[in-house]
Amino acid sequence: MRTHYSIEITQGMDGKDVTLAGWVHELRDLGKLKFIVLRDREGFIQITAKKGDTDEKVLELVDSLSRESVIEVNGKVKGNDRAPGGIEISPSGIEVLSKADSPLPLDVTQKVDADMDTRLNNRFMDLRKPQVSAIFRLRSKIMRAGREFLTNENFIEITSPKIISSASEGGTDLFPISYFDREAFLAQSPQLYKQMMMATGFDRIFEITTYFRAEEHDTRRHLNEISAFDLEMAFIKDEEDVMNALEGLVLAMIREASLCEKELSILKKEVTVPESPVRRIGYDEALELLGKEGKEIPWGEDLDTASEKLLGEIMRRDGTELYFIKGYPLDMKPFYTMPRDEKYSRSFDLGYRGVEISSGGQRVHDYKLLSERLEFHKLSPDNFTFYLNAFRYGMPPHGGFGLGIDRLMMQLLGLPIREVVLFPRDRHRLTP
Ligand code: ATP
Ligand code: MG
Image 1 (cartoon, rainbow, N blue to C red):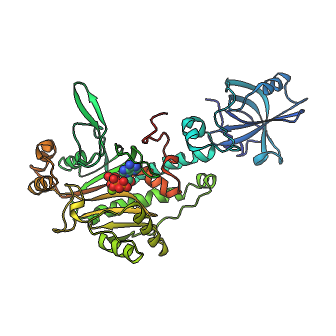
Image 2 (image 1 turned 120 degrees about the vertical axis):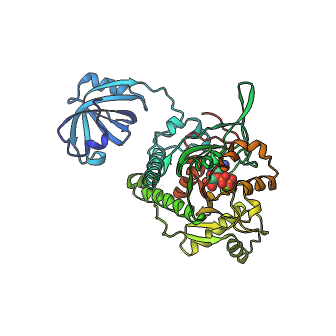
């Protein structure tokens, strides 16, 4: 690897000989002067070939270049006030490493807009745009920050199976697959496995995982394959302990995003870190707040998309962007949800600017109660023997959550979900 990144060039390399490699972003021919704007992972640099100064062979090669070809350039760094960034390269040699066909399927310089389908169909090229690549660099950074936060908080990272034999919770539609001579499914959540881990002595675990959901949504915020931070922790007092962990994780990720100056300036976005402690309201209080705005939701029903959005607006009026809704009615929550009393559960959702980004709660850890809750939900305990067994021989009180990374990214940057996922999977899209 002899290649420098363009950004390093600006850092005191004037007069030095360098080797750069990247894509031909733009070509300009002014007769005596020929410019290449070279793009690499860190930015752009101008290559200036000049009749008289530059070798004839190099000048000829510049004439034959096509946009988006991959080239390696040897040359000298020169200060030039008229060049973008105040610096340019005077080339002594150029080698074409890979020639790009033309016409291009997408305009990387963004002079011509493309619709989302065209962009996703040519995602490899779409990602060459700094405005698109910045999204995924920021995503990588906040994921790393999340992983670091949890590791520092003593969570152990695990990997659970994604091929499962039956539904984890009922309800959510599963994608069936053929598993030799049997039917199996893609996991819609690591729920049962995370909980079984609580019986192992690994009392704080997390996984950065994929959820497969066969729901036929066609919305701005649902996909059929998503990424999530999934966590489970034992020896909790109640769901508040789990909410504290989730709050810490989300704030660490948003804080990291707020520090991504380069990416945010490319994206022309600002990120404000929500205040800690994060506001916690009850389900009943949420219904009341919505009722005051003329939105009536029958007790026992989930907030629909419009109410979630309205609640986000109500919160924003007080400067609140991130908020918990806790104490949902017991019967609307999955069988493993810990009851608070006959009516309410120890569950919560985390809302961020009007969209749910996480759900969690304390779980039932008592074997008998868990069997009853399964039956209440008309699920057969026989299908859950492998899971139920983990509750029979010493299971500590525990709880956890699933935090959608795509949802978090989408709300953080105010973008549709398809913008923040590299190769989204939805009702219609299976390639690329
Ligand atoms: P929603 O009600 O918003 O459809 P959910 O309650 O069905 O989501 P959960 O099972 O609670 O989803 O999953 C935990 C988190 O995973 C959600 O809060 C969300 O961030 C993310 N998530 C779940 N399903 C999807 C999906 N289809 N598309 C994008 N993110 C999702
Ligand atoms: Mg949920």
